[in-house]
Image 1 (cartoon, helix red, strand yellow):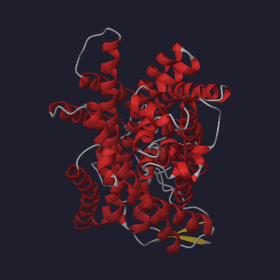
Image 2 (cartoon, rainbow, N blue to C red; image 1 turned 180 degrees about the horizontal axis):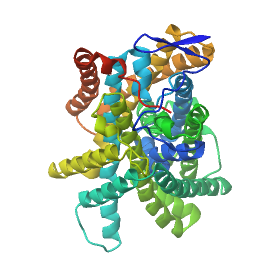
Image 3 (cartoon, rainbow, N blue to C red; image 1 turned 90 degrees about the vertical axis):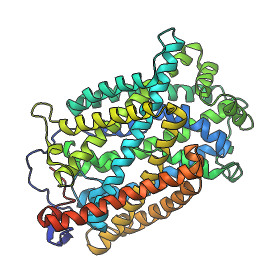
Length: 494
């Protein structure tokens, strides 16, 4: 019989996986299947927004026609990461995800530091998208002859709608996300097929996957944009308590999410390159990066597709926001259940079975951030979106690297029935890849956020500070309440 060593040092006998702790007041319940969870985490990745927004910029600033290869490389690295993440979810069956896994592998203080970084990362990526969507809605409504009102007005409207859906049953959010995701993925796949059937600009080719294109331009920047496109897939474990069969559902959803996102981005970015031609795709991106996907749809599908893609870009951004809202509220719920946040955040609605208090707090947080951005007169796209999505990209790479390291340490200390591939080889490969990506992100961070080197240094310091705050908080809890400290990374699970 294998033995799991809990953070407090008390051995817990297991047979392949740790026994589930007893249900406590405030536990979330649900019956989400693989499809529902995949819908939510893939929606967080905002597929159409990445293909229509990030890919043209990556082509322009990164390695041009070689961008599709960057998505493929990112998917491979993240699959290695997913193996360790999924294995850990079986042996530490709790929904705290990053902070729980890092707490079990690297100790409670680092676990809580990771929790604070995760909250910072997800909150800022959501805030970034609120800014982008507010600006996009403002422009779209003016173009349609509507009133010209400040972008933040539309952002606050979206905050309210998101808060309403987040307050209610998770199944409602899942259904909304399912419809929106199917629409945006459908139009992109239709465009991909049209490009392939028509042979692209000058015949189909695989030049995007050659070393010459892969290393052209600024491959580091291309890789950064590719990794940023995957943000959200790793949050599958957050929904553990609401999964139908968590020991099966969570690993399957994790693998499915990274595979689907990887294949979709690789195929769609390659199709975009083919639509314009390897030699002409960079000039096309430079001419109008924001309108590149609409122009492609118009050329290959007709005028109706231009308008359709425009509308679906807006719904894609909303789906991204709603998905991250659900992730953040459940992260806060898990932290509160583990005594790392006010216990009130762990409350569960009697009828909706949702973390309604956490949802209200997150909605208020988003509204305050939008108000601060408005008061500071920040540009919704060039500053709000560029700056805060940049911090989120840095934060998520640090989070995944720490999790890989935690998996390696945990299984070295606690021998189990898990083979070397799951417990060592794959996590090590993932860690090496993530460290390489982290070095590239830090080296090019000023470019990623579109700001000065001074601003980049401040934002990097903010990421480090969030971890330090968590570590310090853990030390304080250990002194003031040893009992609470002993359960610090043990979020509620069913």
